Length: 217
Image (cartoon, rainbow, N blue to C red; front, side, top):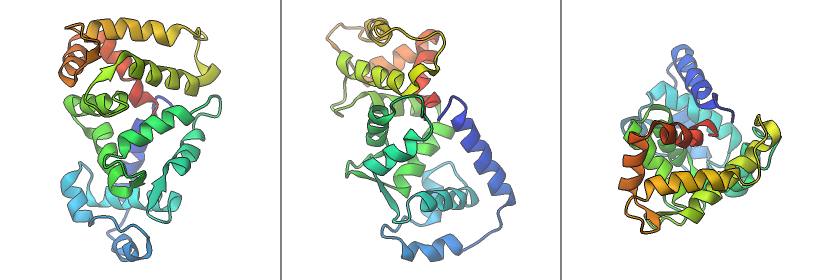
């Protein structure tokens, strides 16, 4: 999705929630899907979405994924539609893993709305925690320079030739060198979540740059 897609999603959800009537349709249809999501009341308590907003999101999710879950291949196909000018497959893989918090190889409606709630309406701290999880590819609690480079390369591959001026091949590595040097304060070759959050919150340039993860969601 483009740089304003999160705002667009939020605006559509807000607008639809205002106009949508109360309905038990979604709850009645839960029994028809292979994966039965948690009750709307429970999701309302766990996210920053209202009941009506969750109903709207569920209808959209169900339309794309009638079975109630989406695997990585389907996720990549859906995501690629938003970036026809580049190759989004690698970044979609990383993004899928970030949403798949229980690491079972599929995304449920719960996985989707929990992540979306953070990205749309979470605090800065929550968003940075989510971003750290995205960059921590192997989920060992640390970000290595190689992991950061893999994410950056995937983003540039996905954006394709739509950037102006056209980015040079070495640009991702140059950016990573700068970011990593600032973040890895004790110079042990890895970035912890505390180092990551502290650096992002205290460096406006990095904060703006790290927000690129929001702009490609």
